[in-house]
Image: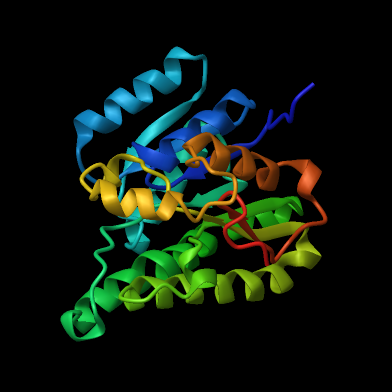
Length: 251
């Protein structure tokens, strides 16, 4: 018998496409009721949610900017009304991440990275922790990136924010452990989802040549890791970074 999330309510931010969509599907198939969140492109989000329901999953689709505290609170309250209180949070939403030398960035772009990868998890936690603490059970799962472990250059804004996300995860794991709440981070490698469809083939080939498993990762690889961190089976695992990248960062 596989992992069951029956009786749980999960919020997956940025789940209309890419990794988020597959994570929402995986948690839904395991029995969780899922809040699928998106910010723009309603038509794409509605197709994703229709596919989610077509396989028997239960949940709601909510448009919200997950860097805005008021919109997060409204989404959490709607979830409680429609599904029950959220006890699993997957912070997955991400903006565009152009690679540039540092002189070509400006502070506004740096700030946008901080907003998505530190501010958003902070706001999500503040809105959902009262219930998790009262229940003495909860799961907060941040979707990070291998770029922090690999110290990727010409990517300073994204790498710095992802490093901050790791630090926040570790601190929160220690703070929340007495309440039975775990906080972990999954650091995927480069997965060729929709946002990378226009990347040069030569760049993709060069990356793939460095992966010890000699294959591309797929969204299910990340979704399955998320399912583990969301489950009872991971109850004694917290503050950890799990790299899902075919052995590219074996440390």
